[in-house]
Image (cartoon, rainbow, N blue to C red; front, side):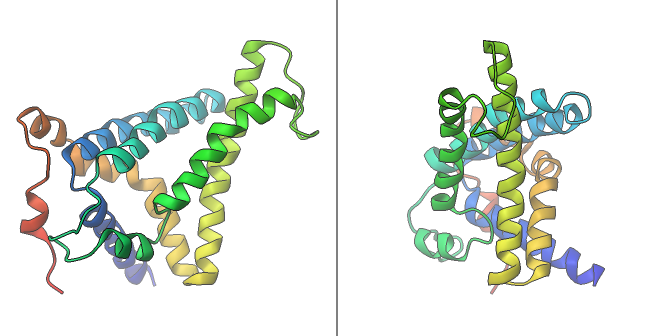
Length: 205
């Protein structure tokens, strides 16, 4: 079972890389995202509020900006797949699901502003600093909730192993992204906008 789990993890990670990380800008942003996520992981043990603020304001925004604004969305000649096909088979959050998740994240401070107790779920904030700490707690809940929701969802639409593998992939992505994309900023500074290595290393069908 462990061998199958690790193989599925490698497959999900490979598919994510080859389908969704062609752009050197996207890769560079993922490098920044990974480094800040690791900082957020450490801060989770000391100050979860700081962890949530860094995780959402730096890690998630850089990560998703790379996908939304810089990743090519035309026909993928390397993998011989349309953007629509890749979105359909995406195991985790495709762009449509990410819009929903990011919308919840962006709108949650407004909800907390107009309902200081968040409909009776939290202690009311009384100052700007207190408001930001409450927002950070809500964002932490949104992040954990988004991870668990998709994991359980995959239990039903795929199987339990796929869901657990995907959750493991998401939690360990910062480590693998540092290894995968640490050369991307240098390549980008040299004027390389698309990773030429994907075509060299694409796995045969």
